[in-house]
Structure formats: structure tokens, C-alpha cells
Image 1 (cartoon, rainbow, N blue to C red):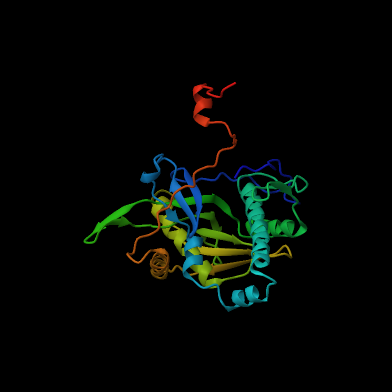
Image 2: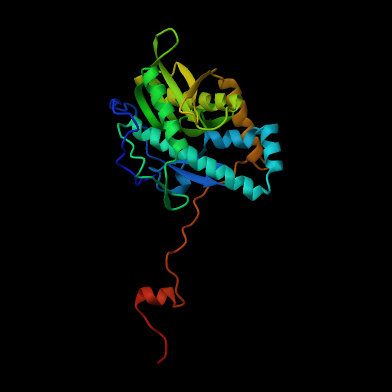
Amino acid sequence: MEQEAKNFRPIGMDNLNYQHVLVEPTCQIARLDTGNGRAYYDTAAEVESLRHYFYGVTSILDGALAKGIGFSKWLGDSPSYSHAMDYAMEKADAGTLVHALVDQLNFGGTIDTEDGWYNDRKDKKVIITDTNKAMVEGYIKFYQENHVEMVASEITLYNPKRFKNRYGENYRFPFAGTADIVCKMLDKKGTLRTALVDVKTGKEYAKSHELQLTAYKILYDSLHGKEHGKIDDIYCLYLKRTGNYKLVKYHYQPEVWYMVVDLFHYMVSNKAGKMPVIKEKEAKPRYYTLENQEQEENGNDTTEA
């Protein structure tokens, strides 16, 4: 997403040192919103029929796992479904903004809070609120207190590697996603380890977040582990409205994750077990006219005087 606010001024963050981000995506990936969630594909495949579409990790979790009784009660107590979704979208926008600000810092930028931020969904500039600022301050505390050395920031993870067995050929990693942070940081024993950290601005959903991190670790290790080292630990960084943070370490659960992937495929496939065909929507033309388009292109005018 092209951001309008490029020149950022720090909020008491002048001692933030620039860190070179070492690891970049292995290919150019694009994302496409579908009826079953977000899908990723490699843009190198210009012909749509040759593209390998993988659903995003969070879309798989949303499609396969219930959100819990708390979510059901909140939805039921809302004035309407559309009101609840509008509220959820506002929260998502706030989270996206904080992620963008954190990413800017990770690449050595500074934040000018008076510049605001361009919101693509609303197609307008929005202000950076005090809550946004407090969460950024919480991130700075995490960064400094844990002696973070940045390895990758907002890195897209997509691996179309295949394998063969007696049932035929299939994808080894039929999912994709974007990891917020891969870094070197000190653990509680003072040992420098490679960590994958996902930034959260909302509530803690331990099971879902654990599986999300697990999926990212699987992808990152398969793509970059040999050259840059595999992930040692996985964490969620919960940024608070108070300007503080909570760092929670989770367990790696690959067997459970692949069961969730299988469940998602079962839920969205048809009776024959076929997954839905993903296609880009045909772009609507910018201009419309009542004139015959073919005549205009050929320069022929058959209209009688």
C-alpha cells in the first residue's frame, strides 16, 4: 500500500537506530480478496490459469475456527450486524495504522504525527490518535528493552513447493501470509535468539494466535531458514492503550495447524472435494458512452445526417 505520510517525526524516539532489514520476500506477491477470505499469488505468473493461489493464514483460521462465545454475545448485543461490522472495520483500520507506523520505524523512518495517514479504504487522510501514539510508544519500549536487532519487517511468506506421494502431486505449504517481525532478541536467560513476533492491537486469542504464529514459522523456515537461520521462538506483542506492552511466548503446534488447514479445505470445498476456483474480478471500464464502441475504435461513423 502506497503511503502518503512518508516523512515521520518520532515521539521522543530520537535514539532509535536505523536497522537494515536483512530478509526480503523470495518473489513478488499480490493479494486478492475472495468470498472465502484473502488469497495470495505470485505475480510472475502473468497468465491467470498458471497462478497458484493460497489462502491467507488468518482467512484459514477465520474460516475453520469459531470465534468463541464472547464474540457471539457481542454480535448478538449489537444494534445490527452492519453496525457490528462497521465497528469491527474501524478497529481493523486502527490496527492497520499502528502496523504501518511500526513498519516505518523498523525500516529506519521517523513518525510525524501531524502528517496523519492515508486510509485506502476510506480514500482520505486520517489523524494519528493519542491511542495510536500510545501503542507506538509501547512498541518502542519493547524494541529497546529487548535489544531487538531487526531481520525482517512485514515480510510476505509464500512457498509453492510441491511434493509427490502415492496420491499424486500436491503443495507442501498450501497457505500464505505476512509476518510482522522477524528479529534477534534476548530471551529471559540473556541468550540472543531468532524470534518471530506478531504485533497485536486488540484482545488476546491464545489458541488462534498460537496457530497463526505456527503457520508463519513453518513458511519462514521453509523459505529462509537455511540461509538466515530458523525461528527459535514465536511471540505475540500486545500493544496497550496505556503506552505499555505485553510480550507472550507461544508454543509451536504444526500438527494442529495442518489439521486446521484440512478443516478449512473441507469447509469451503464442494461435495466432490474441489476447492473453489479463484479468479480476479474483471475490471470495470472507467468511461461509459452510448456510442458504439467498435465504431469509435475504427473511426467509422455510420450515423445518418
